[in-house]
Length: 458
Image 1 (cartoon, rainbow, N blue to C red):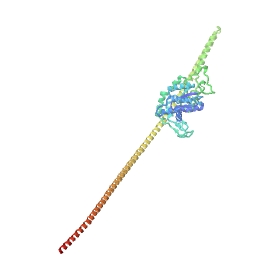
Image 2 (spheres, helix red, strand yellow):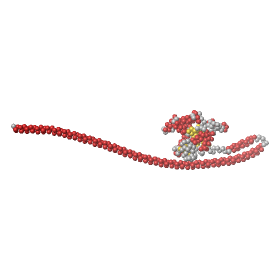
Image 3 (spheres, rainbow, N blue to C red):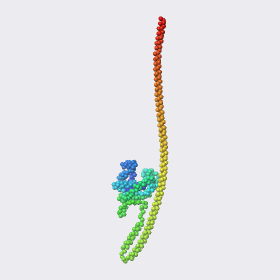
Image 4 (cartoon, one colour):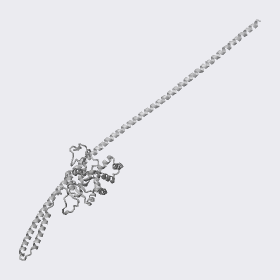
């Protein structure tokens, strides 16, 4: 079983792929899972993909194809595989076909899960995924038992940021422009099938299983199962086969009765041809007239029955159409209600976001004020420290000046004292010198007096 699942975002490809894996024992190959695993394991291809993503570019088709080819080399893909998420456009499909043909394992079927876009928006907006085990839920169609918690492992349910109405509509436009042309591509190869994607998950799964079980035996998809041979030994060409909830209704018996009337006509003409004896011509004519009347009556009765059956079929169709229209109206009403609820939730979320932003802004403003105050305090402290430093320097300078002045005054005092002492010494010396001179004078005077007195005595 080598198949690819095609469908718009939210059509349920991932959910159905997991159920098909459990049913048929073949692996699901999701390009998103391959990329994440390769990047986490830091393989050569993973490093190339990471470099492209880090630079803001898309991962090239060649890297994705190389990853798929590596995955095909693992033994669990021998019985087949289910491709999910790739290819998404015709160039990718052509490259995938070339790679699979090179490996001798071409695709057997491309199954489109067809879902109305209004239902898709509802599905994607309500989608929740378990962050632990990957189990998927929908808050509208298949909600968990406990809000926000997984029923299987108890993990928290994650709502993707891009699962909102704007991004969903953009993704659906991209799907219509790029992925939808794949349907014609695979139809031209005789490999395209369509399954109705509306209704319960189990109903959709049964439709997919019906398509897969009807694939030709040459695919080798299901060992031990044989495909029903086509009538007349002709090969079945798997054109687009829509398997919907009313696909099991048998064909109407109108065509069968028309064929019976045609065979009755042929029998009557043969009987006319076999009437050979001339003697029994009158009897044959009477019998033919009676048979004609019977045939006419039968035809009239058959026509009445056909008309009655046609009316009954038309009534059934009308009833089915009315039921389908009611279902569509109910679905549309539910979708409208859910849209309103989603809009309200978005508005509430926006209000919360705005309030949070305001709180964040206020907190930021407070932080700025606090920072300004802290900066002002720091500036004041710096100024005070600078002033203290200047004052200290001035004090030191004044102290130095005073000390120099004191030293100068002390030096002056010492100098003056020295000068005074020197002067005193000089004065004392002079006095000492003067005293002997005076003594000498007095002695001289006395001697002169003595001489004079002596003279007088003479």
